Length: 359
Length: 129
Image (cartoon, rainbow over all chains, first blue to last red; front, side):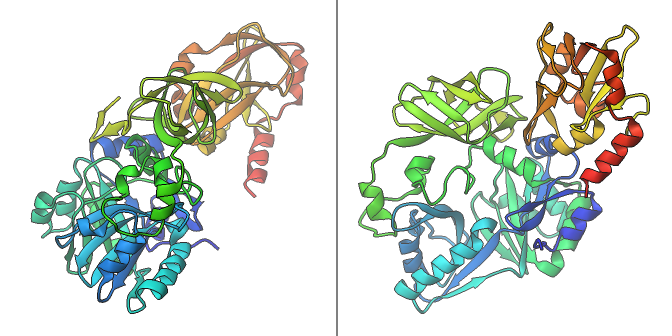
């Protein structure tokens, strides 16, 4: 039996094609994935991301605990509402999950974790809590639904839909969150466009969704979310990284704060493991489509595509690939596409940001 | 569900049209394109290639996945739709106009073994359960 979000009936009403996504019945598209992709790049679309789990960490010295728990340093969060992207590692340096942490007060931090990792994450965090900070209270917030409103017109359509949010939508900086009544509004996203991720109580979610629909925000499925995040060069947990690789193998060195003596979980392993793999961007130079798990042949040895797709914005195929260290920007590599070797260029990523091609 | 009565169909969701010149055009059905989603790539077979019935001979890729297209009957490829290779989204918008390749049948009577529209509708229905 698949789990359903509070917006499930709205998806059925809109004739979404629903699929099993990490045990949840979620919309993959509402007609055309490519059209939905373009809507987010050019106008405003919304995604039901209620399958993701908000988790509240409350209590004295929540900060000290998260300093231990995360590879990025929550000490970067000093003003209320600031958000930080981080990996949570196990002792061996592998990635348990990637997440966003919001600093609301010294005794309240909120995390948002991946749907497919939620149970495992909670168990992991509780185990660490018992060891390092037994007084902290950890609360999964399945009572909250989450909608991502994304695109260049996300801000103006959000304030149309929710009177009273105009000032907020116009003045709030990226990677900030505020609490507005029962809503938690964050200027974050997974598309490479401006936008908001908004948590509302489950009961209020269908009304919020309807108000956004009436303001002209188009429902978009997880299919478009995947091509948007790939163009934006954002990793997908379970595809681009998992417990078997480190952030350094996954293009996420920028999220690991090794400065000072902070002894976070996984630090020791990261200092001692060889750094022999890297994540690079690929652009296919021939006709075809790059897909995950295709083999990549380079002058420094073999690698593998971790995420590959057709890019609607670039009208060609792009990928993220894990390849040996030594492969450099501008190199040409070969990819095995159904038995044929095809040429691809190693390019920098993100591939697309704010509606514009970067490669 | 759109299944034109004048066409023949395969279990692997190709449609086949017998043309006035004795050749047959091949594409994929409305149902197939709906399952695959937005089409982004087509690789049609080379003209002159001789195909056995059921042989893999073309590839279509949607944003989601790659899918093989099979020769519905034995024959020689006499045309490939280069225009469609440049505009694969036509497979979604007008699947029965979007022919991928044409065959000169080895034996035109082989068409009789394919499904008609009624049988194909039943086949689609059976796969849904």
